Length: 193
Image (cartoon, rainbow, N blue to C red; front, side, top):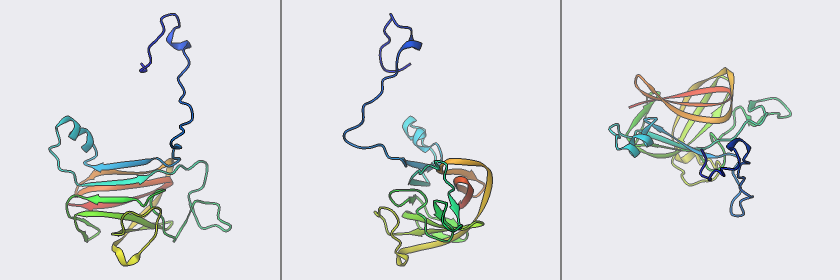
């Protein structure tokens, strides 16, 4: 039931929805910002007072939409959003940020507790994930002198296209995996702690 009161003279199925007029203060972003946590349900645990598991990681990113486009490719002329072998901010708008609340290990590389931007160089069969200390940047302005670590992970084609770019954590035997998927491509970043 909505927050609006129901007029008893009109059955609910005949009422028209209330549509907000155009917002004069801010346009709706086509790539909404999202946050993923590990443990996955950490915000709910915190709100309910059952936060017995310590927060390990969170990623803050914007979620661009496929909108019928081909996302990854190398064809000429370009008929895709992201060219293989070029820098990608892993989302849209501001640079994607990842924060570790404890030291972690990713593919035998130790990464200290802290906040980083995370970006990617995607290829058809692998993604190179880069952790960088150049915070507070809009878009992706790479300053490789501030790179903390480069990690190569496999990329795979899937049979289920994803409309919005998605980053989510899932539990793994050694810690957590950060699942990154868009269109029909998926890459998994293994995080041990």
